[in-house]
Length: 427
Image 1 (tube, one colour):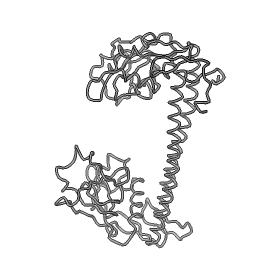
Image 2: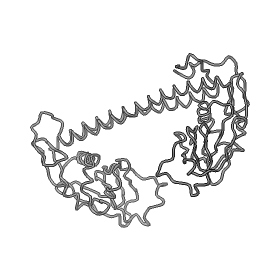
Image 3: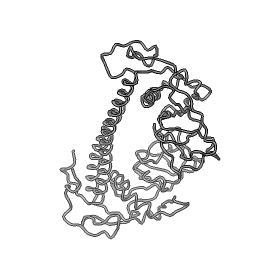
Image 4: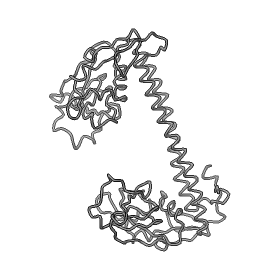
């Protein structure tokens, strides 16, 4: 249902408050300090379990979470209190506590007075209120600022009566649950699309496109059956290692391996952990296959392989492979991609941190379909990737719309821009 289609109140009045705008005529305009006391009682995290204030709400602190240095110097939180992190770099970290506990001193703990708990959650976590909350704060260093209670208590609120607060909270609880469920379904659909794409890629690069072709055992456990006319050879038959260094700074375009793509690194990122001279970097040509072959043991999530589209230089810590035979670089990059996402590549690392060198890589078993089949497989998978990306983008846009709709719906309901009636709430 579009926001504009929701019912409105019969009459509105100007609140005189920028973040509220016009409010229903029957709503009370009051300062936050009239409806919340600041709870400042100091307690121990032994007596009161430590809680974390996150964007998802006030939750039990995880065992591996960073602990405060002084466990006896925390703030008491009682069930039903609203807690908000006062630092601007924690924007949106707030919520109503569902249990007694303790939080670090950087948080403001508010005890509600004659205000419905769930309405408080929606009102004080609304986008408009959060922006107003941090607007009244004071800078402490650079772009970081905090908001104290003596500043927060002056923020103006527009409140309906208690019965209407309850009705609005019930409506928002139900609608937000429905929206979140719709978002979760679409996110699951995206993951299924990605999994399906990965399965199609693996099947195409290891078995080809003809399901009726005679098959044979590849002799490679993770591959299994392959077309009878395909070959299986060690990696050094296909690839050679490129070790050409950028001596004399013949190239200045710095490349980076990012999310399975080789990109040109922006100049503003060429700070911090960079070498004194880029002469130690290796030269890269379009068509080179780059593998980030370090620290296999501790990182099993990153995409480690990509094909270069641009000429430039990249860190010598990466493995740079060039084709030794006339073949499709894109096909062999896809084969390496499959080895990467199936984690087959992790079996070949050596050393304490399982780094992969060319000496390890050269003995990998590699498939060689006929060149025309390589090209057809690449063409087929390009089409699969295009259609998959379009579907993922469509779902992503729908998710973004739902998130924006949820934000607008909450703001509209808690500031009276729309009227919630009993008929709109499922009992």
